[in-house]
Image 1 (spheres, rainbow, N blue to C red):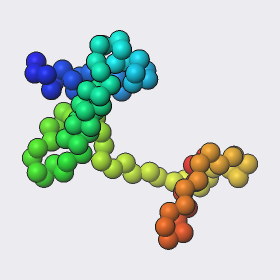
Image 2: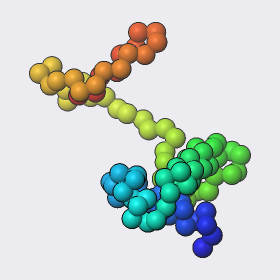
Image 3: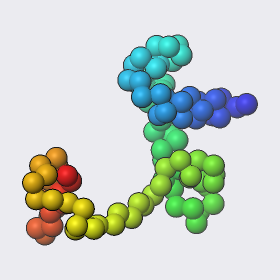
Image 4: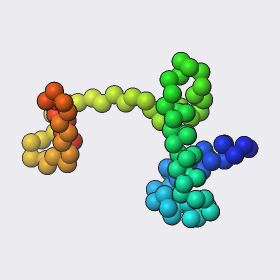
Length: 97
């Protein structure tokens, strides 16, 4: 297994572990700076357009580039508190209940 494969596997383990980055790095004897490098490297490799042929299908399945959200207005009740509200340029508002 190459160093890249090992580090990508560790990034995947960290994502699934729920541990803070520092704790995970300490447990695996990895410097935070090195781990951050591999996280960025994997993210940029996965987020490249597939048309370039540089993204492996295995990595691309871990991080979707687009997730469609459907809305059913009957699900939300006005009595629910708004947890987050985003106001985008142009006046578009996104409310998360």
